[in-house]
View 1 (cartoon, one colour):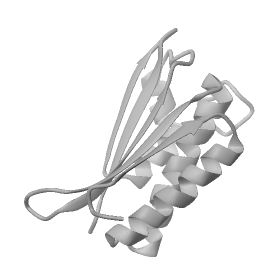
View 2 (cartoon, one colour):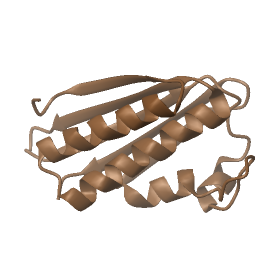
View 3 (cartoon, one colour):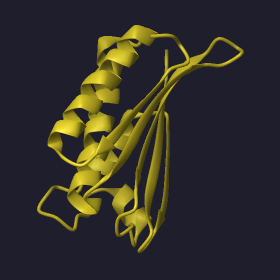
Length: 136
């Protein structure tokens, strides 16, 4: 695996989520992330993948390893679906909001584990979440 790799996963069930989590974590370790930060990356992949399965049914997760010209390295996680969208993004980011039986901490918790986090969601069209973790 090089420092400019991309992993792409079609997400439709828990097995796909587990595979994306495992391979994303391995990519982070290979890139030089500590075990603790690689685990944070794996948790984010898992939470976003689980949300795809629970709310949209299907979608994709893309994990990108990059090195900038300055030498700084990072992993970008992109979770994308064509599901129902999020009607109140700010409420979801605040934590504790859920339309399922969960705790409503998946998205807000994921946001706290990474350095950059963005949600682009349109009701009736779907959601794209981008999360970036920089190598320390």
